[in-house]
Each structure stands twice: as structure tokens, then as C-alpha cells.
Length: 638
Image (cartoon, rainbow, N blue to C red; front, side, top):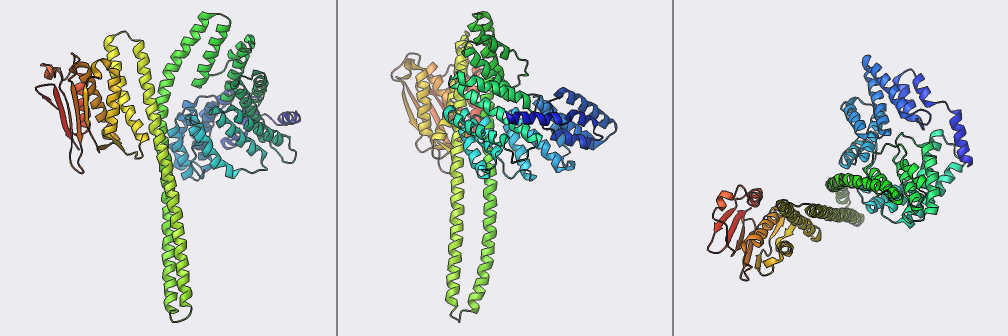
């Protein structure tokens, strides 16, 4: 309580930063006042700042003052970010950065930090990684970190491990604010990983540290320091409240969340605060669960700018729950349907984009690790050269003293140098091998996630099938689902293999055929299937076309090749790949064969056109032979 009064006294004594900003005589002074104001929106709204900046920017453009134009546009980009207009902020920042050779380093640092934050909010993590590489090249940061990106991508365990590894070594035990931030972040990652009890312990540790920091009279604190500390205190209280809501302990959750809202609302440093909105929604949820319906409705009707998709979805869900409790089922149904439409349009897209960004992100991390390994090798080469030069000197000394008793000492010295060099080499080899093992693990995780994403696509196709009445549309969706499963199986086999570069085709084809056979139960289990692909291994670029081709062929055999449910039916699949030689693929069945007008129907057949394109990817041409019984497909491949 004392610290809050102390903070308020300081704010009353300090002059209004907005008025100081307007009274400044030039863009440089305004720039310093703007970015050093601890809570620039406490007394004047972001829209007041935005209006003034537009006026000053127009005057700078009229006077063709390029330095002032840059400064005002950078400040405007910060205001857009604070208002939650991230796309607009990014557009302005990228336009400013085109003249990056002429930007002073301190301005460039602010610009890149702001770009980093915008890309995080827009979930453009690959762009965010590029910005961090740029910051490292400019010497703004020492290392490229990924833990917050992994957290946003839904991998909190990896995010926490990397955060602890990166940050724990820099923690000063006597720095209470730093310890509060550290414990709060670890608690946040534990909460994201649905580990509420240990998360609560970390948040309470963070709460103790921040209270010690605010209450300490030994350290002199600026107004900016106190604003940041009280804002963090509000965030920690909100995190504790959210954990107790998840644990259904609403009596503990509600006081924490109310305290958090009051504190964040007073000390938030931007016009838009995702933490404030999230805590409002959690408090509304807790009030609903305890049947305080009027309080819940007041919270849900607050006039916020809902930018984050998850906030929009949760608000709609809570509105629906509120109207359910009020037995206004028409209004509840409206919000349920609204949520379904919003979720369907966002969730599927985000899963695919997230999978793609995760793969690119891990590739970026691999490149970063390779660069570090390259630097280590270069250092090792320099040391080796120095050692070689030193060995030459030692040899000269040894030759000059060969006729003396010190010759033996020279030999011992050379031997010891050799042992030291071997230890350095062994240590470097261990580091490289450990890094390669970790990267293999990451690649397996990528393939596992890609497989899961493809299964999600398959499930979405299944859901769509249930809502479709057209027989042709259902067949098309089922065919699409079968092709997605064929690709998913490739990624499953990859992360199950020790060797991530190739697919063992015998096992893959057996699994693929079993999957197709389970769909076509009628007659499918009576057909004798022979697979001859032992010791054939293909990389993923060739395995995926093969999988899709086989999916089409086996599916067509089951659907059309054996209409009479013939128990003598057979399918033969043959693949051979000689070392350094051309490979051969052959598929035959003894069914009823192709129709007489097959050549005329080739262009209209989706399956035939798809197989021809896939075979073209393999740099070959599909051959189709009509035999006495059934049909034969074959081609050579490299």
C-alpha cells in the first residue's frame, strides 16, 4: 500500500509528458520525450498523440526535413503498435527501413525492436527470426533467441527449457525485479503446458520478488522503474488468477483477477493491452461459474478492441454461456454459430501456417547452429595453425639442443602439446555430435507435427463429408482424404526411422495398402496382394509421388477391378532400384481390366491425370498395357 501511494505522489509531481512533448522545439527532443515517457497514455490518450504526430509529420514533409520525417514516422509506428494496429505499424516500419544505411544505430535498434514485437503479434515468426538475425549482425544483441517464438507456436516445454538455459546464467540474485520477471516467465510457460500447481508456485515467487523490489528503499527508482514494476505486479496477479480459474478455485481466482485489472489499467504502457483483455475474459468466466451473471455481462460488454483471434473466440463462448444460463437459447445459439464460423475460418489456417512456420523456424535455428559450428571450426583451425607454428619453433629448439640433456625435456613438451591438441579436438567433436543429435530430434518433431497437421486436414475432410449430400462431392472428398493419408504416412515413417533422409518402401507400401484395404472392406480382404520392394529406399521427394500413385492404383483396383468379389483376385506391386542405375516400377492386377474407351477418357480422369503428373515429377512416363487378364502399369525412374 505504501509503494502505491509513493508511485502516485511521483506521478502528481511529474509534469504531463504530452504537454512537454508539444512544448519541445524540435523532432529530436520530442523523440527522446516520447520514448522515455514511462506511461505516455496515462494522462492523454493514444489518439491525442496520434493527432499531434500527424500534424508534426505533415510540417516536416512540407519543410523536407528528412531527419524529422523519419523520427515522426517512427513514433507514429509505435502508436499504431500501442493501438493494436500491427499490420499498419509493420508497413510503416518496413518503408522506413528501406533507407537503413542512413539510420543511426540507436534509431535502428528501436525500429528493429518494434518490428520484432509486431511480427510476434501477427504470428509471422519467420519474419521475426529474420529481424533477430539482423539485430545480431548489427551487434544490437549477442544471440538469436527462439524461446518466445516456440511458446507462441504452442511448444511451451521447449520454450521454457531454452529460456532457462539462455537467461538463468545472467540472473543476479540481488536484482529483485529481474528475479520477478524470470519466475513469472517460467510460471507462464508452465501454465501454457497445463501445469497449474507448479506454475502457481513460480508466480508466488515472482510476486514476493516484485513486492521486495517495490518496497525496497535502498535502491533509487525512477518513475519509469516504478511504472514497469507495478505493471509487472498486475501481470503476476492476473496469472495467479488464471491458474485458479483453470483449477476451478473461483474464490481465490476472482480477487487476484480484480486486483490485476485495477493495476494493469492504471499502469499499462500502451493503449491496447492483450493482458488486460485476457484477464477480463477470465474474470467474466469466473463470475459466470459462480452465477454472478450481471457482473459477467458488464465485463463482456466492455468496449475493447478485440484484435487476438483467441480473445474473440473466448468472448463469443462466454456470451453463449451467459445466454444459456439466462435461458435465452436463441441468443446463445447465435454466439455458438458465430464462434463456429470464426473458429473454422481461423483454426484450420493457423494449424497449417503454424506447421509451415515451425519447419522454417527450425531450419533457421539449424542454420544458426551451423554458423556457430563453423565459427568453432574456424577457431579450431586458427588454433591448429598456431600450434603448428609453435611446433616448428619447438622443433627448431629441439634440433639446437639435440646434443644436450634438454633434448629429452623437449620431447616431453611436444608430447604434452599433442595431448592438449587431442583433447581440444575430442571436445569439439563431442559438441558437434551433440548438436547433430539435437537437430535430428528437432527434424523428427517437425515430421511428427506435419503428420499431425495432415491428419487434422483428413479429419476436416471427414467432417465435410458428413455435411455433404452430393455423391460426387463425397467421392471427391474421400479421394482427397485418402491422398492426404498417403502423405501423412510418409512423415510418420520418417520420424519413426533412425535415418531421416530415406523411406524404406516395403514397410511403407504394406502400411499404405492396409490403410486403403480397411476402407474398401467389400472384397478387399479376399484379394491376394504381393509386394516386392525389399531393400528399396527412396528420399521423401520421390516417396511422396510413389505413395500417391500407389494410392490411386490400389484404390481403383478395389473399386472397379473386381466387381464380382472374385476370391482369385490378385495385385502385384514390384519396385527395384539398382545402385547408381535406373529404377523400375510395375503394378498389375488380374481384374476386369480397363474399359475399351479408356484412351478417350484419359483427359477426363482425375486419377490418370494425377498419376501422369506424379510420374513426370519422377522424370519418367507412365506406360499402361492391356493384358489378357487385368491391367499393367509400369515406368522407369532415376
